[in-house]
Image (cartoon, rainbow, N blue to C red; front, side):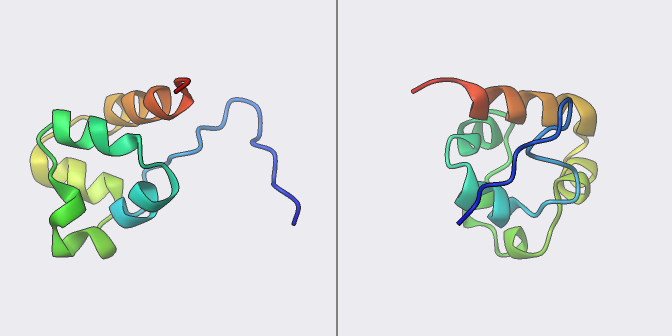
Length: 77
């Protein structure tokens, strides 16, 4: 199986991904979710709700939130 390389400047997590996709693919991202008050891991809406929708519902700046998520997943263990 070939892994796709990320395009330069493109963030792995984007506003159109659902919370469940992010939690499954990038477990470290859940730290940012909880820190920002988004308890998405246990929410039934996590299966369908996108990052953009969740941020709007919680009054969070989407761009800044994505920056935090992508920074977190790039951190080394």
